[in-house]
Length: 143
Image 1 (cartoon, rainbow, N blue to C red):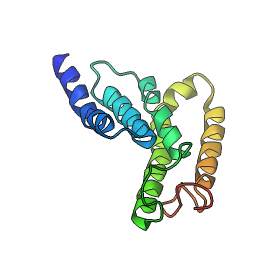
Image 2: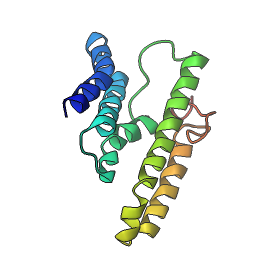
Image 3: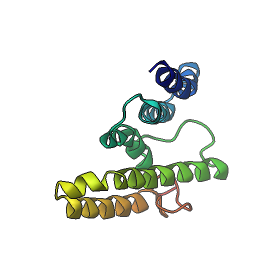
Image 4: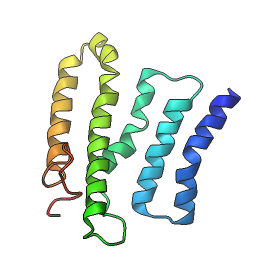
């Protein structure tokens, strides 16, 4: 149990330290996603439904509800890294929910799950202008 605690803290500490050193709204979402993923990956006891914990900050990241962090917004490198982050968040959420499919199928909600995943991916592809679902999209509409 102590090893799980040490691993969880060690995995979450870098993003927390960065957020304390240079706080930002974008960094906060990244720190939330990292901390939630650390809890899911390194906890002592994990259930399949625990994967939902990191999905909320990942969803907020994928749909880019917050403005981009301050800095040179015209940089193509920054734009491509944001598009990659958004694409990873969209597809990471899809893969994480796929791991819960046996539970959803047992409860008889497999059709609703499939419809929600299709809608989520369709929305994710449209959230970034040229497509967040692929790697070529921008961070927000009109960028």
